[in-house]
Image (cartoon, rainbow, N blue to C red; front, side, top):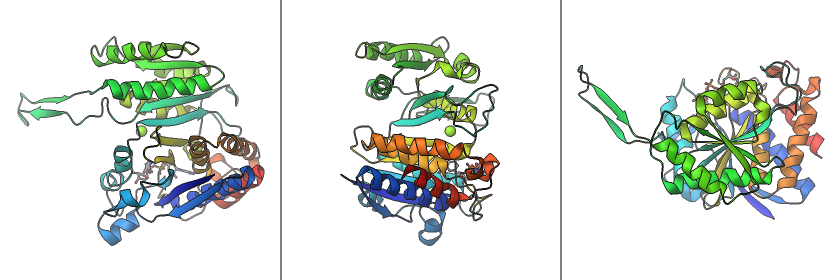
Length: 354
Ligand code: NAI
Ligand code: MG
C-alpha cells in the first residue's frame, strides 16, 4: 500500500508542527507496513505570495489534485498579507474545488488537558461534529437594496439542495453506525427557520430509515449549545448545517481544552478529490520561531488522514500514543504548562508509537 500525500506547511508554526506530523506518520508507516510518498509544496503561504503575487500557482490543481490527501499546516501572516487574501486564495479554494463537503472534528477530552468544564474526566467527552461544508447559510445569493438610505434592505438566502443535504447526512449516519454507541444527533432550528430547517429535518428522518440500527435525536441549535457545555457526555455524532456546524465545531473543542491539540478534516468522502487534514489552530505568529508550538493538533490530523486512507489501526495507535504522551507532565508543551518544546513532544509521540 502506497499513499501519496501532498505536504503543505504554509505559514508560521505550520512550518514547525508539520515536520512533527510527518515524523509520526513515518513512524506509523514503518510500524504498520504501508508506504508514504510525501511531496512537499511551498505554495499556499505568504512567502510564496510575496515572491509570486498569488497564493497558488496557476496549475495548482494539476500539482496536488491527484494526491490521495493533503497534509496542511496553517496559512496566514496578517502583517504581510491580509487574511482574506491568504485564506480565500488557498484553503477556501481547496474546499470548494475539491468538493470537501464534510468538515469533521473530533471532540475528545484528553489526559493532561484541563477542561474548562468542571468535574469532567478523560473518557467522559468523546464525540464527533460533522459540519456541512459547501452550501446552506453560506451562500452568495442575496443583495442590498436602497443602499445608504433609510429604506436599506439586505437579504441573504440559505441554499439547501437534496444532494447537498443527503450526502452529508449519509456521511454522518455511516460514521454513527461505525461507532459502538450508534447514536446521532441532528442540529436544527425548525421552530424559527420555517422553510430550510424543516426540510433538513425531513431529510434526516428519511436518511434514518436506511440506518435502522442507529438511534437518533434532534435539538434546536440554541439548547444544543447549552447541552454541549452541560451534558457533553450525551453525544456521539452530531451533524449540522454549515452555520450551525461552524459554531458547534468551535464550541466542542473549546469544551475540551487547548486549541493546540484540536484536529480537523475537510473531506471529500468519495475520494474523487483529495481531502485536506489540518489542525484547527492557525499560524500563531505570536509564538512562531520559538519552537514551542504544540504539535499535537497536527499529529492528530495525521491520524484522521490515515483513517480516511483506510489505515484504521495506525490511526488508532497514533491517538493512543498522543494520550500516553499527554499523560506525562514533562512531555507537555508550554500551552499545557509543560517544559517540552515542539520537537521533543513530536519525538515522544513517534517513540510511544514505535
Ligand atoms: P491562531 O490559532 O494562530 O492563534 C490563537 C492563539 O492560540 C495564539 O495565542 C497562539 O499562540 C495560540 N496557539 C495556536 N496554535 C497553537 C499551538 N499549536 N500551540 C500553542 N499555542 C497555539 O489564531 P489567530 O492568532 O487568530 O490567527 C493567526 C493567523 O492564522 C491569521 O492569519 C489567521 O487568519 C490564520 N488562521 C489560519 C487557519 C488555517 O490555516 N486553517 C485557522 C485559523 C487562523
Ligand atoms: Mg470557525
